Image (cartoon, rainbow over the protein chains, first blue to last red):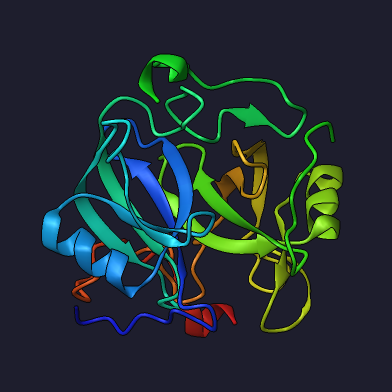
Length: 119
Length: 119
């Protein structure tokens, strides 16, 4: 890659995933250098799971993969945007987007699958 | 606010700003509790500047303010989405979006102002 990414002190960059068709912001996660390289090599979104402390291919368990349309980098080269074709829903709770609630707790997003049948 | 936000060890949450009209992802920044409260009180996007180590009202210097349409929170309550009406461009380099480059360094975003005349 030509842009020199700034992975910071923890070796991670935040990644915004956006649906290529709807433009919806689907989720925010993190990637280390390996996850970015795997994303480019495979064309499928990879992240670094901070809770499991390991490389994480989105949808490897659920089947809700993200095919990469484009990876963009921000002006400071310390954040990424994955523009993706999302299969199923991005959120493990069954919603299309992880950002399905307002700050008041009102649900405004769309539920697209039943997590009990998926995981 | 009804959702109990997780500001983590550093007291910050990442915030994605999205243009309400175009759906474009404009920038990624961070907010502390005060920035979130000021955003809700004023209806204008506030962040926490990690480089200047202070509360930051977007556009206070440039005039390129962000009027808040909605604030959404993700499933883990550790990331926010500001849906905004962006005046001018979000990026200090003059582009509409900070995510105006691919990983290869190709410029794919639109330049909307001259930073030399703004700052």
